[in-house]
Length: 294
Image (tube, rainbow, N blue to C red; front, side, top):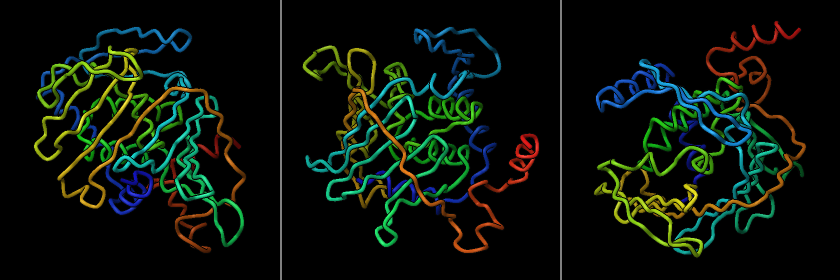
């Protein structure tokens, strides 16, 4: 399972889905399930959560991206017991460095939707923005939750809240550590809760998948309610090339510095300057913002 390359390819070829379509779908799904809707505000000073009831929609309100990305994370990916890559997330810079086994040059991601890769031919890093931050997070929300059978609503709430503060969900699988809590899987017939041991403690909880095409898959949290493991074993056609993988999350101090890099466009040559696809299908919105700054 190679989440970076797989998701980037999927994001590029799926195309630009309309934001309203997923929003309407999720709202309808919430109504069908009879979900209670709330407005949620975060106090980042002590990580307290203040909740006020709203009859219309559930909204996660952030003052800045650091309110959401509030801890350093290390995520390791294993395939058939072998370490494939390790991702380091720095909550201060809101950036991720991914070190892949057999590759001397790490990949980098920032909170603006850019990824950075070393170009051996040019001898330096190049950077590219596949899509605007909002579109990147929006499509990742749809792809990740569908591929890994995760509840849609928490992912979408996080996406909307980060969009409001100019950030996004641009860290592929690692961002799950900031989105999901045990409460998102409790009292849900799609998952079965099981007490288990992790990190030398016996107060962890595992939610085993009840999906027939995801045998032995589970998501696991430690005693502090933090994401600890995500194991995927799928017979689904969408994951036929990489059907297995285990993500292990730990919470340790990390330092990530984005390297200097040459800016590139998805569309090479002069056409890339004329059609800035990284600004999405509505670039005039950015033009208005730029004019206000000048």
